[in-house]
Length: 102
Image (cartoon, rainbow, N blue to C red):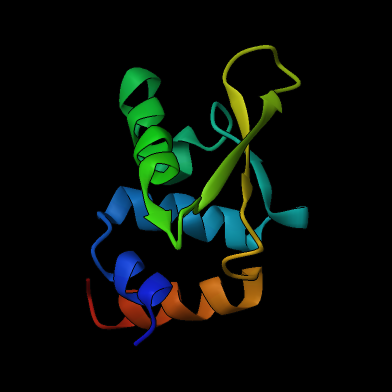
Protein backbone atom coordinates (compact mmCIF):
# COMPACT_ATOMS: atom_id res chain seq x y z
CA UNK A 1 0.00 0.00 0.00
CA UNK A 2 1.51 3.34 -0.98
CA UNK A 3 1.55 6.40 1.28
CA UNK A 4 -1.48 8.11 -0.31
CA UNK A 5 -3.61 5.01 0.02
CA UNK A 6 -2.42 4.48 3.59
CA UNK A 7 -3.34 8.08 4.43
CA UNK A 8 -6.82 7.69 2.92
CA UNK A 9 -7.42 4.52 4.98
CA UNK A 10 -7.28 6.64 8.16
CA UNK A 11 -9.93 9.18 7.11
CA UNK A 12 -13.33 9.54 8.75
CA UNK A 13 -16.54 8.64 6.88
CA UNK A 14 -17.25 12.38 6.30
CA UNK A 15 -13.76 12.89 4.84
CA UNK A 16 -14.22 9.86 2.58
CA UNK A 17 -17.58 11.21 1.36
CA UNK A 18 -15.97 14.59 0.59
CA UNK A 19 -13.18 12.88 -1.35
CA UNK A 20 -15.69 10.72 -3.20
CA UNK A 21 -17.51 13.89 -4.26
CA UNK A 22 -14.20 15.25 -5.58
CA UNK A 23 -13.52 11.96 -7.38
CA UNK A 24 -16.96 12.05 -9.04
CA UNK A 25 -16.98 15.77 -9.87
CA UNK A 26 -16.16 17.49 -13.12
CA UNK A 27 -12.43 18.31 -13.13
CA UNK A 28 -12.10 17.29 -9.46
CA UNK A 29 -13.60 20.57 -8.20
CA UNK A 30 -16.49 20.99 -5.74
CA UNK A 31 -18.03 23.73 -3.63
CA UNK A 32 -17.98 23.09 0.09
CA UNK A 33 -21.32 24.83 0.68
CA UNK A 34 -23.15 22.79 -1.96
CA UNK A 35 -21.61 19.48 -0.85
CA UNK A 36 -22.85 19.70 2.74
CA UNK A 37 -25.78 17.29 2.31
CA UNK A 38 -23.67 14.59 0.66
CA UNK A 39 -20.89 14.92 3.26
CA UNK A 40 -23.41 14.97 6.12
CA UNK A 41 -22.06 18.12 7.75
CA UNK A 42 -23.04 21.79 7.70
CA UNK A 43 -21.46 25.08 8.70
CA UNK A 44 -18.28 24.94 10.70
CA UNK A 45 -18.35 21.13 10.88
CA UNK A 46 -18.30 21.01 7.07
CA UNK A 47 -15.42 23.49 7.01
CA UNK A 48 -13.62 21.25 9.48
CA UNK A 49 -13.86 18.29 7.11
CA UNK A 50 -12.28 20.24 4.26
CA UNK A 51 -9.67 21.97 6.41
CA UNK A 52 -8.57 18.63 7.85
CA UNK A 53 -8.19 17.26 4.33
CA UNK A 54 -6.16 20.33 3.44
CA UNK A 55 -3.81 19.72 6.38
CA UNK A 56 -3.12 16.10 5.41
CA UNK A 57 0.19 16.09 3.56
CA UNK A 58 1.46 13.34 1.32
CA UNK A 59 5.03 13.79 0.09
CA UNK A 60 4.85 17.39 1.34
CA UNK A 61 1.71 18.26 -0.66
CA UNK A 62 -1.91 18.69 0.40
CA UNK A 63 -4.47 16.21 -0.85
CA UNK A 64 -6.89 19.02 -1.72
CA UNK A 65 -6.27 22.62 -2.77
CA UNK A 66 -8.44 25.69 -2.09
CA UNK A 67 -9.80 26.84 -5.47
CA UNK A 68 -11.39 30.22 -4.68
CA UNK A 69 -14.82 31.30 -3.51
CA UNK A 70 -17.90 29.40 -4.61
CA UNK A 71 -20.28 30.92 -7.15
CA UNK A 72 -22.83 31.49 -4.38
CA UNK A 73 -20.31 33.63 -2.50
CA UNK A 74 -20.61 31.34 0.49
CA UNK A 75 -17.91 28.79 1.19
CA UNK A 76 -14.91 27.78 -0.86
CA UNK A 77 -14.29 25.69 -3.92
CA UNK A 78 -11.92 22.76 -3.44
CA UNK A 79 -9.84 20.90 -6.02
CA UNK A 80 -8.30 17.47 -5.80
CA UNK A 81 -4.51 17.63 -6.03
CA UNK A 82 -4.12 15.43 -9.11
CA UNK A 83 -0.33 15.49 -8.73
CA UNK A 84 -0.88 13.08 -5.84
CA UNK A 85 -3.78 10.99 -7.13
CA UNK A 86 -6.14 11.09 -10.08
CA UNK A 87 -9.92 10.96 -9.78
CA UNK A 88 -10.25 7.41 -11.11
CA UNK A 89 -7.70 5.97 -8.67
CA UNK A 90 -9.22 7.89 -5.73
CA UNK A 91 -12.69 6.62 -6.61
CA UNK A 92 -11.43 3.02 -6.68
CA UNK A 93 -9.69 3.33 -3.28
CA UNK A 94 -12.76 4.87 -1.63
CA UNK A 95 -15.12 2.36 -3.24
CA UNK A 96 -12.95 -0.48 -1.93
CA UNK A 97 -12.97 1.05 1.57
CA UNK A 98 -16.73 1.56 1.56
CA UNK A 99 -17.33 -2.00 0.32
CA UNK A 100 -15.49 -3.23 3.45
CA UNK A 101 -17.83 -1.17 5.61
CA UNK A 102 -15.24 1.35 6.76
